[in-house]
Length: 114
Length: 113
Image 1: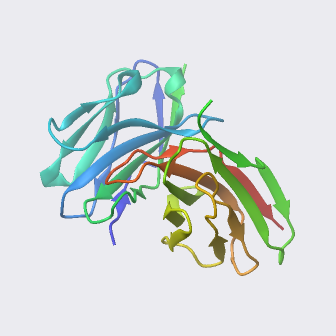
Image 2 (image 1 turned 180 degrees about the vertical axis):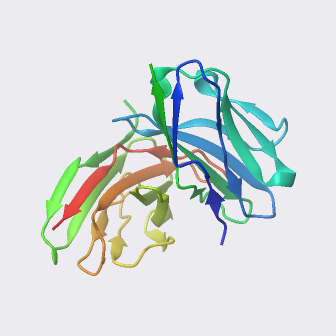
């Protein structure tokens, strides 16, 4: 079975600090990759996704992620975080043998101090 | 407004009782999903349905049941056989097809005592 690992469970940053959240997956074939975000009190929503092409993907609110196939990784980055980025972030993988099923990582809870 | 509604937001039940969580979508999506979210474990798939009158077990289906009689609705029943039912339950929907974006509801927090 596929698995998705998010190594950082809790991250605390000050405003304007740079952010990188790790995501690694175990499937060896072709994958579609997603980052979802859950702001306090809000629905889980899509931040960005990678299907093919340029491995550097840009999403909403200044986030980006880089797919490195050789490392089975899809790390999320933001050069300068804001207090409003405080949320829980989930990486998800859709292997090409899984239809539209997603496997989620355990999530990273980010707190940004003003 | 298009979206997914889940009700109620909070639900309390006594151990040994079955309870049904509601999920409705007006996005005209064919596929619907139920996830369970526990701290540190992310989202785990309970059941999914690709089309009306058809559904499949996910990774943690034991102690749960679903029905899909209408395209818009995908209720989840947490039965008394579920050993650890207290959790946050999320419903989602998507169009059919590889890698389709899933849209999520606001969730139902179930507490069983």
